[in-house]
Length: 113
Image (cartoon, rainbow, N blue to C red; front, top):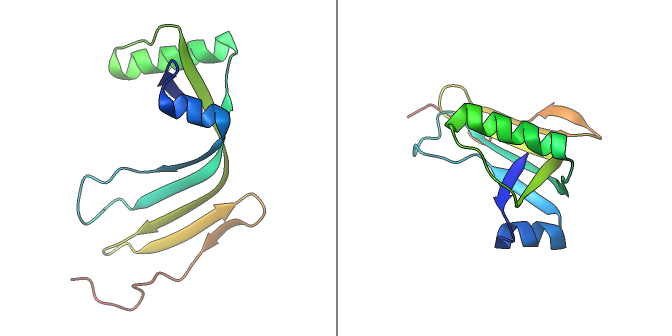
């Protein structure tokens, strides 16, 4: 679930074109936890109980509760990709059609520096 400010550019963009990609933020140059990317479609949520659940979760996590009006979108994930580096090198992808696939990592066979 994604909460967005009312009439924000991002919310208006998703209303116009629901395609979305989300990526994990990196705060370390070696990306020790890997990179996850999700691809799918944003679905506008207007159902009050679902918005209430988001409000409750946000308040529990960060002690702040959004107030109406605001936009909420659910993300229908169509495919995903993951890659990690260092000692635990992994590369995977997922789609509803193919399921989870483990792929050959581009650094396979190289020593970790």
